[in-house]
Image (cartoon, rainbow, N blue to C red; front, side, top):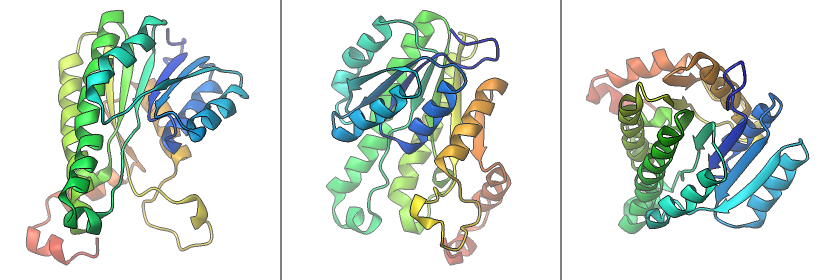
Length: 251
């Protein structure tokens, strides 16, 4: 169950090697979260992530999960919930793809869409149903500011996130009044760790900043969180720009 401050004590991270997911786990472990499930494809990276979280004092378990195999989601995730209540599910998996390659290779574009949207729809519905059955919990869905309006530079990725965002909003409406919170998180450009010496990108963010925003959103029981917060205003303006003008922007 959540603690007196509304923060989870048990987490399931779908996308167990996600930098944002792991930063959120570290932050919540520091706030007394004690059980963490990392769901992802079996790999040394997944094992290393689990080991590092264990050093912080949490009971960390891994589970084999493949976003591209929705037929397995109900069984795999059902086993996690069968082990005990989950206070927070963080849907953190996704791929950026390569726009130029994906335009030239439609099957590669389909893989981006299947991972970011189809896989998320399947896993999101399974987890929302399990949270509803236990009568409480939060589902946090990592969307993206890119989903607000598809840009020429990454419209395949952006369109997949737009679909995910719309799905998560509708799921939140479906869960209203059930005891299950659905929170959509829309980060901006993720600043690479190697970019410390590079010029600052306006409205860029970091996994740690997103994790902080997720914690605050959980405390407030927010439905939508922008990171950084100024993106809300910027993207509202971008969304309503006439297309001829939008096409001329260096985006």
